[in-house]
Length: 440
Image 1 (tube, rainbow, N blue to C red):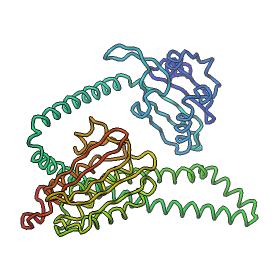
Image 2: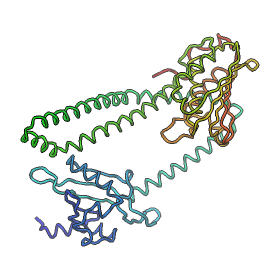
Image 3: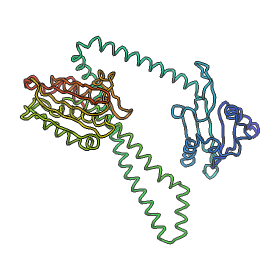
Image 4: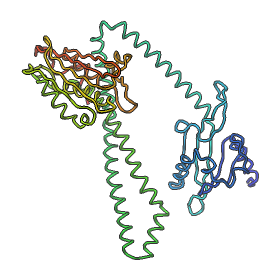
């Protein structure tokens, strides 16, 4: 057995940060690791409130400490989540450059004989070496990715004369990949989403039941019963749990919703041949599309239409052509920062049906025009789009032996033009395109 003095000396000299706080966040132990790196000797820290001593980190620390107090479980924070909890200095092993230390944090509950948390032990580990190599690796991978993009651009320019064939092959490859990824993700995320929605209903019912029980106890005028209920709630931190549970479930549902949205886009991308070929009225198609997305458009743009009378029918896959219309119209509306206009013209031009969709949005930058139909290319914010809409539209129009193009100037909006042949041979159209199978 070692005496308390020796044990305290060992803790002070540990090569990690060691701090002990009470349940009201008062600092009771402060080792040399903290003192040397923060220039804060024990006399300046002991007896002080940890949250008041570090106001910038107080919100994060309080959330972590409270979770340990409530759940009585160890809490971890890794450098990827929050690199610099405390402003420690450290030398990077790769460059020797002095900068803020990357840190892992672990908070352990120290309980008394009754099982209640009496103290919280905070351990800070230097993760700078791991972080340095990890960040250096990410930088190298990023550089490699940039070089790969440059090579891909060179290949695209060299083979531009064969663009249509290459695009078809690219669509088949990415379609198979998208279908495979969506298939693997769709079932488990469906279970999770369904279970989370059920759990949300259970949680709401449980909260209502607890509140109702509290109301009945209050109405009973039984001081003893009210006291027992209040003591039980305090011991179990019911107020905290009742507030935190719905928020956690809502955040989880938002996450699963985002994943399901991506899966849906991938499924649509891999199902480009799902509708039948038939004689179609393009005006009816765009009108039905406008009705479907009316809620998306009515607050963003006023739609003006100019349709040729006696417009001939076009032999096509109507569902897929409508998808092209929808993608272009939604992109136009989403690009508008204030109320604008969308102009739709449908007419014949030689042996083609011509559909023109023009908007008064901010326009498309010149350097993006030649990438606008590339798979996964998007100028939207992270999480706002998958970059598959216009790529899918390009694939659909190409399959119809048509053409799709875009013209734009910054500040003057963009205009998409779709040309579809009026006289396609019916027998030339396959029932299903084997290059992109409906495998989901």
